[in-house]
Image (cartoon, rainbow, N blue to C red):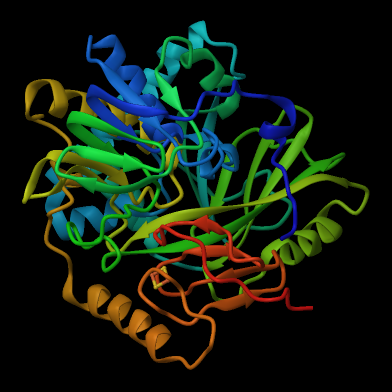
Length: 440
Ligand code: FES
């Protein structure tokens, strides 16, 4: 597998934590040591709740260390969609939850040295499209300030750009360094199964009163059926030296278009994305853009991230399943995991400590799914199941696809990934695959 490293990981070493040994008990067990899990632990600790985080590998080893780290409530074109499906109340609930998350980052960022700086966020379009105007109207209808621009500082012409002022960017690992002291964490401790409120690892068990699943993709299939209502997407980033210094953070309204933000002296150029297990532009597309717009620039790092995508664009935060009232989940952040993680931590803190929250209802994992996207996602998985191949995913048996760019075996059904020797890289599969000789 190709070794890549984000600029965050290059610059910051997080502390190591011991493996869970033996049996223990806690009030709240948090499974998963990414940004969402660690923020849940931080918020609960400050609310006086005893909690323990268990991480299968290293904390912040997944998308948290490979994000572009934008802190914004502007999530592509989501507000018009939510207004259409859930009314203005739904869009306002989504906005308020993310504003709370952003505000909490601002508060913590005053104490933690994490390069948090205020920036405007922009969604731009290069083609005539009424969608962006509709998004502006949806935002105005719920009282959110926006500005329309006909031109931008981008190195190509745009038809329009929608600005949301007062957003922010930061360094996620430096931020985590600031919240980690005092948290109870075990690394290298894969949870193999959960029986009621007891989690079982290879070397011990954890008995809890409540459990929060922050494992990126929830791995307990019998409850919640997250594998039916999510899929995974890969996206790519280049860090360029000597390129261009944008004033704001930019993203294309098109699903897999280019994104831009500054990080110190570097330009972070994102894009090239695709559903996991399928083809897409990848780093090659980004390098082509870099050569075209900044031929004098130099690539200093490149990396990729894997995001959980929900079928309606709204994360799942709340009770894991109506049948499991002591289990909670935070997943499906749709590429907006930094702000959504904080919104999730604040919401779950309330649900865990008070039993309910009077906001954040839009994230309810038990909400109704639209039949068409659900059917399309199930059909896509069925196709993967019926595809002939000797190499089958240990999750539910779909045909694995060779990913020559990253030299891994990827599952197009729900996005599990494996190194060429079969070692598990990404859930929902919970064990290694038998492996095969590396394809040349
Ligand atoms: Fe579900 Fe592969 S990830 S079958």
